[in-house]
Image (cartoon, rainbow, N blue to C red; front, side, top):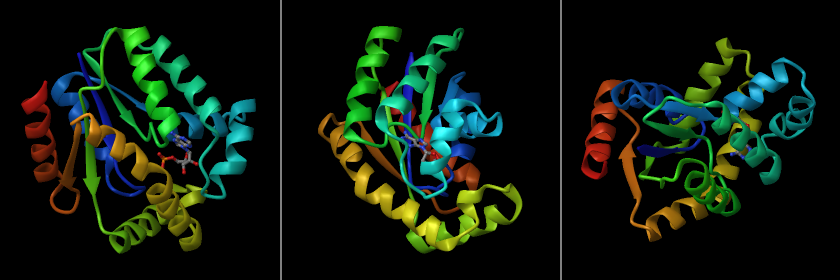
Length: 192
Ligand code: AMP
């Protein structure tokens, strides 16, 4: 089983690269951002609660996010592994994920792949996406900058934890999409 944590600030191309990794290694993706957006669209209780945080560019509380992830993992069968996209973002979530993967899948996190993109490139990419995606959190530069700031504040510690385990790999996230994918594949092939 291959379990990849795909890591990177908002706008770093996580979603696109996850798609390529899924096809290459027959994985299923779990994106907590997508799950929240699905819940908001359907106006579930979870969605309504999450919206107040997401619209401000803040993280949704750990417990709610982790419960949602566990539920999604339970529902997902028939796969050779998972890509975790947008989770974990805190130390608490990192520890929770290790336990969940062990208990539910009898497996481990294989590698944490981190896409590295300069802040100003991220802001421009997200503003552009906001013009067409309709995502409220992509439409305002201040909210975007806040999300990037939150990323560095709260998730640097996640990178640190994977570094300590020797599982953290940085890949340059600027360039041709297929070239970035090739670099990610090479890193997975080293450890799978
Ligand atoms: P994303 O699409 O991954 O950028 O997520 C969009 C928003 O959903 C984030 O800015 C957070 O408000 C929320 N979110 C997604 N994943 C998490 C997570 N693991 N922990 C807390 N909040 C999250």
